[in-house]
Image (cartoon, rainbow, N blue to C red; front, top):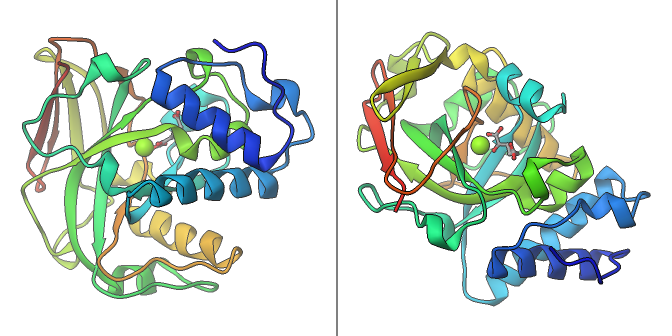
Length: 264
Ligand code: OOG
Ligand code: MG
């Protein structure tokens, strides 16, 4: 934990969060020292942090939603969904262990993942128009690793921290979302062979396409859109579970196959 720095501007907040990630050190919330940090400024910190990752060679590959399910909102004590960015540096190929030794306190959560066929720009996007721009749907697992101690944060803190993003895995089963009822698509989450949680796609905003529409409309407020070919993580269906070395976590879906991750 770094207690010496004083973070009260966008540049130093982004630097401090990137430092915490690189050095695997959790820290107190940015709002402890910068209580006036509002949501709009927090999104500026997030944008700066991603611009820094891009400047160091990473490429934006998509968007993630956070806190779209009641399970996640209740756990984190925050009731508003948010958006953040995915880069190619976060991609974890299937079968590759989660590098727990490089992370702070990783947790994993099952998600429904879209790959976009067309560009989707708000405002005014509905679940139906959102769905029409999707190319395929996959099962996914997101690895989150908040840079804040004990995953304790306010909404501006977690927005600034790019929504705790760390890694994500996409399953091998590709489906046309129009062939499935994604509200009823079920997911069973197992840790070391024991079922710990379950949910259906309805957990995220009633339907994952509602979450996608929400992201498109929220990005439009900042003059941004979801581009063709991008990946969209629609948000954890269940509460996230910690992943420790040697543990195996399986997210098994009705039609989207299963995704297995192991902590290294
Ligand atoms: C924030 C990230 C939330 C999701 O899917 O809800 C998120 C957190 O829980 O640390 O990725
Ligand atoms: Mg997530």
